[in-house]
Image (cartoon, rainbow, N blue to C red; front, side, top):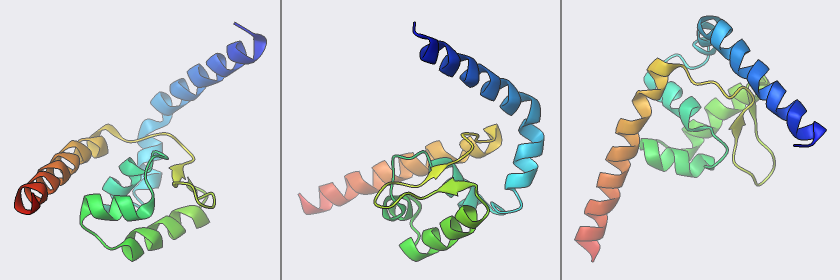
Length: 121
């Protein structure tokens, strides 16, 4: 390993420890903005792999609704929204109770897409 890899590895450990020790405090702060299940689901899906229109489709919401919430998160520096790139959480932390909301949503989306394929093809 190079020095840079060692430093990055050590920083990841520190970040993980800080998230564990401050999890309840972070969750409480996030709940000021993610005040309902839909917003919590949006937070969980902000992993840098989906644009807002994809998140809207998964959740069955409008892109505008997702963008409004993302704007709030961006103004509070909780989310980064680089031009032409998917939004991502600045703090890679999802409370365990929130992450339980996502598998159901993703399964429902897959079922919906499969039923649309069955209807059309």
